[in-house]
Amino acid sequence: MSNSQQDQNKPKLLDRLRYAIRCMHYSCKTEKSYVAWVKRFILFHKLRHPGNMGAKEIEEFLTYLAVERKVSASTQNRSPCASLNRFG
Image 1 (cartoon, rainbow, N blue to C red):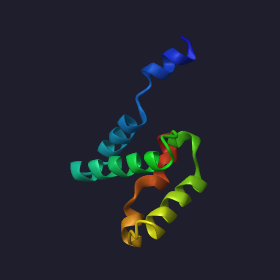
Image 2 (spheres, rainbow, N blue to C red):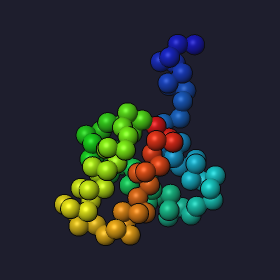
Image 3 (cartoon, one colour):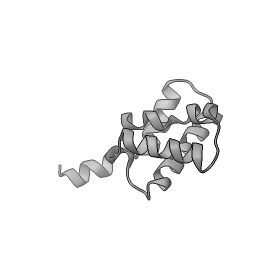
Image 4 (spheres, rainbow, N blue to C red):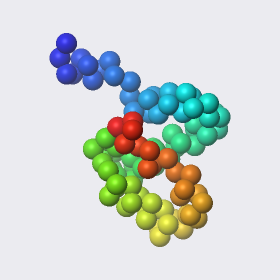
């Protein structure tokens, strides 16, 4: 099987995230919130795949939230972006 065929069979990032959240028995509302945060993170970085990013990009995103969007520290702490590398 070629790499492209393997990539087609591999679940997408957000599907893997949803699966992991469900395995941890989080609520549906939490799942939706985490997926929304991850989408914001991806859009902030101009649709780059989180698997190709690391701590630097996470820090940039959290700084943007704090400085530009004036998001509180407690809200930033709820962002699942720090966990993205597990699903990338």
